Length: 428
Image (cartoon, rainbow, N blue to C red):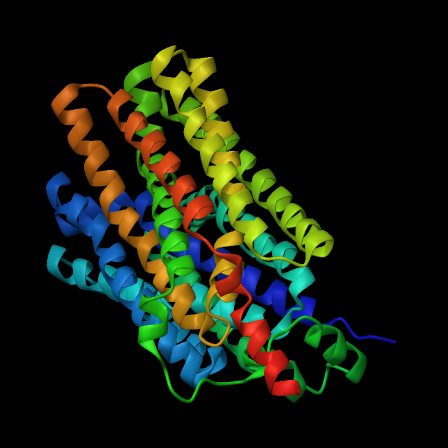
């Protein structure tokens, strides 16, 4: 009888992503008391809001090669210890400069998360299950954490104060590290809880590169010359621009344009992220079904492109015929369609560079992080200069269409099959 320990690893990674996103967004719920205690004004708060993305952007890129060389167990274990300690240090930052450094370091600690999760998925899951697993990680981990994060953090603040909230989140990270070090191995072949039947099942469809535990020699040239990976990175930037734009500006948009109070904004903000959960889980099932039917990888790029087109098209009614009902409906559709791609980015990264999945995922994740720096700044400039959000939605639509074109026109099946061909030659 085949064991199913690989799903315990998936659940562990889902918990990591939930802690990750709750941790990074927690400070936004404590803006009032922190500003008062530390004497921080609105301009300084804007700089602190971007500090996380600075650390995250740099490390998301460079952590990929580290994950490929040293393995996700060591890299991710060290990273979570760092981010947990830094999260706890927030309570003693005391001033603007110290808080800025803390937020940069928090981004550094959280940067290896998705590259390490991608590497783990490429070694622990067979091809036909990666779509569901990675969509579960992204759907439950990202959009799901945005649904539950607010209530969790606000309750912690209400009962423990904002300092107690940060200490609790730090403790949660340390507990996760202990579970990770006990439960995880870089390869299922090294884990005593995985029987031979499950090892054979995982190996089905894996390339020779995907069976290696570590990459001895990192090859940046293969990453930077990989056209499929550039298509993934640009598409991820396009989707990230929409994601971060709404993450930072949806409450402000609903309040400014439709004069909603804070309670109503909280209620109305649930619908788009609920659509994101549905979209991500749906995308995972679509991805696995298409691969099972065709055994080809490029159709995944086509599905990603179609989803981005639908997401971009959903922006048009928001500025063409605005109303509260129209805006909520089509913002939800846009986020839902966009999140269909949620697990695809990581699977597509593995497909594009199976011998360096951490590096490839870090490259894609860095482009997503870059959009997290660009989107809120551009939207803020547009709103300040025009007094309207409409041009911001136009930019979202245009980027989504361009990203879709890159995914559908630049990707090549022949390059995606290179790893499979090398395995066939090796086995002769």
